[in-house]
Length: 178
Image (tube, rainbow, N blue to C red; front, side, top):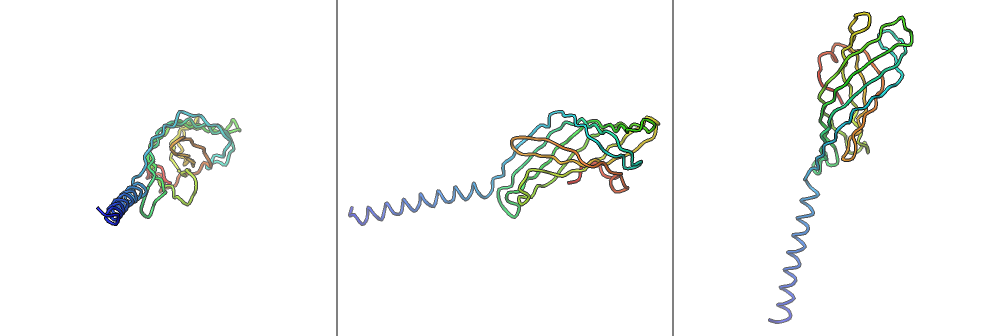
């Protein structure tokens, strides 16, 4: 075998090895979405808020737990995005500062689904969920609670925002809205 034939044979093998490596790297970069599950360990959060029906200030206490299922998209037009599903449940209490006003308590349970765009540069999913409550005066009130869920491969955590009135559209939905 001449040195030209040896060089030619080595070149063919080198090209094949490089092509195989490129295909392998391309396949892993293209597609395979990375999935993860994160439990939301029971957590109690207390904060000040306003009853949107009476405009009375008071304390809100929410105890929540649940599970998040996430998937990072590896290719396509949504490459880098996260898809998050899961469920949450817990209890809610609104205690007004004015003791002549009713206290409202209730429980909630909901499924959730949402997408976190890559360009948001965070793992935060905004949600809203419905809580049906009963007041100490016997009245029934439905609230909508805003939530920010931080979900990634390492942690699941939630924080809560403004309490809102429930309108007719919200009342017909069982799941959280991103």
